[in-house]
Amino acid sequence: MRCDRVHSFDVAKQGYVNLLHARIPAGTADTAPMVAARVDLLSSGVYLPLADALAKVASEHIEDGMVIDAGAGTGYYLAHVLDAVPAAYGLALDVSAVALRRAARAHPRAGAAVWNLWEPWPVADSSASLILNVFAPRNAPQFHRVLTEDGLLVVATPNPGHLRELGDLVISVDGSKDARLEDTLGERFTRVDRHEVTQQVALEPDRIRQVVEMGPSAHHLHRDGRRERLDAITGSVDVTTSFSVTLYRPVS
Ligand SMILES: C[S@@+](CC[C@H](N)C(=O)[O-])C[C@H]1O[C@@H](n2cnc3c(N)ncnc32)[C@H](O)[C@@H]1O
Image (tube, rainbow, N blue to C red):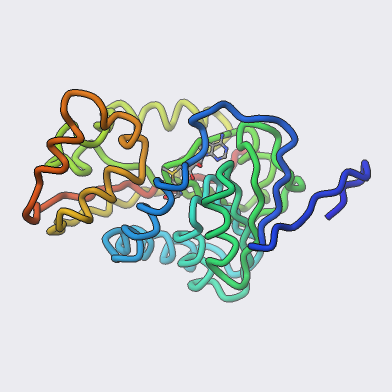
């Protein structure tokens, strides 16, 4: 691929393109073990209710156009959304090349580009009919710039009760997150709807390990005997998963 300043970028054999021209701070991107844990956990269907909720919202609001998954990880949620909107195509953006190798193969109508979401996105103005943002950084000015006037921003966040049975093995969800979400989106977006997706699931020890190891909690396992406590879990645990799916329209 070539930009109009004649920089060229190779499409990797796995199907994604790396557009990053600067180093990103260590610890920003999901690592290979985190991605492996995420792939296993998501393939078990534990978070399928969230994927279904996102797909339903998308099919109710758009018919076609580009869906950008900002912080797409392995592209799991983007693939569900594209399945639900057959005339749409997708773009997975994420700073983790390891994750994007998966995202590039997640759906035949999806492309994937390694990018730092805090930089201006390599995407044209008013070009996306939907932006998906699932547990990932939120860059409100870029959301606003790339969405069409009647576009939709769909943000998924964990609720305070999410995984509460796992105690400090997972980093707890801050109860003021809702207010912070509104703060980050500022005056550029108006909230138009919100759905809660909550369920109880029995998780086997391997699944519990994947839940912990696929996210930022993985970086804290060396603290307070957490690794030992995780390894000591031998039976299944009933766990609550709880998410909010919040819909926003851009303010013109
Ligand atoms: C908790 S994961 C969520 C991934 C995916 N949405 C999912 O739920 O499976 C957060 C994702 O954001 C990505 N990420 C973190 N900081 C980023 C940045 N500055 N630019 C692009 N992606 C970033 C990570 O690499 C990771 O894939």
